[in-house]
Amino acid sequence: MQIEQKTTGRTLYIVPTPLGNLSDITARAVQILQGVDLVACEDTRRTGGLLTHLGISKPMWSYHAHSSVMKTRRLLEALDSGKSVALVCDAGTPGLSDPGTELIQAAIGAGIPVISLPGPCAAITALVASGLPTDRFFFIGFLPRRTARARRILSRAVALESTLVIYESPYRTMDTLQLLEEIAGPDAAIVVAREMTKIFEEYIRGTLGNVLKQLQGRELKGEIVIMCHGNNHSERESEQ
Figure 1 (cartoon, helix red, strand yellow):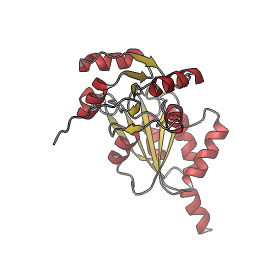
Figure 2 (cartoon, rainbow, N blue to C red; figure 1 turned 90 degrees about the vertical axis):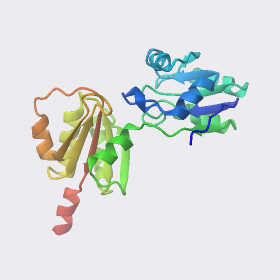
Figure 3 (spheres, rainbow, N blue to C red; figure 1 turned 60 degrees about the vertical axis):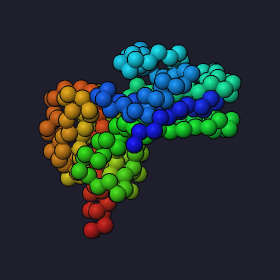
C-alpha cells in the first residue's frame, strides 16, 4: 500500500539516491524531494540531473565533504526558520562515507527533527550479494591514504573475524588488496564488487591470492566495494 508522504517544516530529511540505476529511487524519496523547500547536495550538477529526470525543480545548496562550518550553520538557520531540507549525496545514503554527519549532528543538537528514509546503500547492496557471512560485518568505509594508518585499521578489523566492508577507488584497489593479503593471508575469502546496479556490474569472488592474480594488469573502473572474511594469521597463531 502506497501512502502519500507529506513533508513538514523545520525538518531534515535524509534521502538516499540511486547508486546508478535511476529506477532504484523510491516513491517516498520522490515525494519528499517534491515537498521540501530546498535540497542540500554533494554536487549540484549530479543532483540537478536526477531532479530533472524526476521532473522536480528545487533550490539546491552545495554541501559536500569540504564544506565549511558556515555552510552547516546556514542550513541549520534555514531549518530553524521553518524550512524543510532534503539531504542527499551523489549516490547512496548520506552520512555513510558521504557528507552529512555534521549537519545531522547539528540538527539533532538544535532539536530539529531528523527523518531518515530507507533506500540504496552500496555497502549493504554489495554485502548481501557477496555470499560472505552477513551475521557479523564491520563497515570501514574509505581507508586512510597513509599505509601505516590503513594497516593498523585493517589489522584490528581482521581480528574481529567479521566480514569487512571497504569502499575504495579503482586506482587504489590493488594496493588495498595487497595490504589485506599481508594481514588476512592469501586464503582469506574476498569479493570485489564494482559498478553496482549499472550495465557493467561485476562481482569478482575467490581467495585474496586468487583475486589478486585475476586483477593483475587489469584496468578497473567505477566505484569499488571490497569485502573480506578470514583471519588466517590468528588461526595459524592459535595452532602454534
